[in-house]
Image 1 (cartoon, one colour):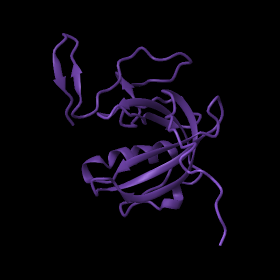
Image 2: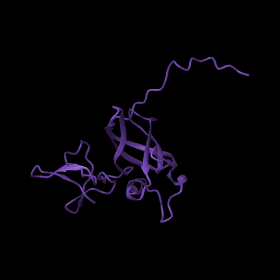
Image 3: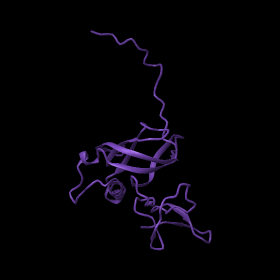
Amino acid sequence: MAFIPYNLDEGGRTFEPLPEGEYDVTVQSAELGNSNAGNPKVAIRMVVTGGDFDGKVHVQSFSLMEHARWGLRNFCKAAEIEYGEDGVDEAAFEGGQLTVTIGHRTADNGQTYAGIVRCRRLGSSVRTNGNGLPAVNGGRTTTTAKKPSTAKPTSLPGRPTTTAKGKSTTARR
């Protein structure tokens, strides 16, 4: 029997999420599984291509609960991954290329998590709102600029927003 001559208490893995920003990514894989709550999900593993974080991996999970499937649907549209009424093949994700905007959220335990807040087809100038659909302003499609947009982001359903008059509301579908 071989002995493994390493102190397993030394070293350790520290997780550093991708900084907030825009990244070109290539999808490596998609894996069907369950969330901690036991709900169906798909975990998309993608790798950053180019820039300071070239080769850094980001994993994004999408809920497959009926009320949340729009997230995966819009990701598929941005990556030009074909899907049908009966679903999508895990293998179809491999090699998909798109540009994602990463945002951060801090959990109750203080851990920072990175997640996709916007996505678009790689090389496309069409921006998308928070749910992955093309952002539209008065019937005109908004295009990306080299500097960050000063436009107020579109609210997601159930998230608090502030109206132009300063009143707090909750976005609805």
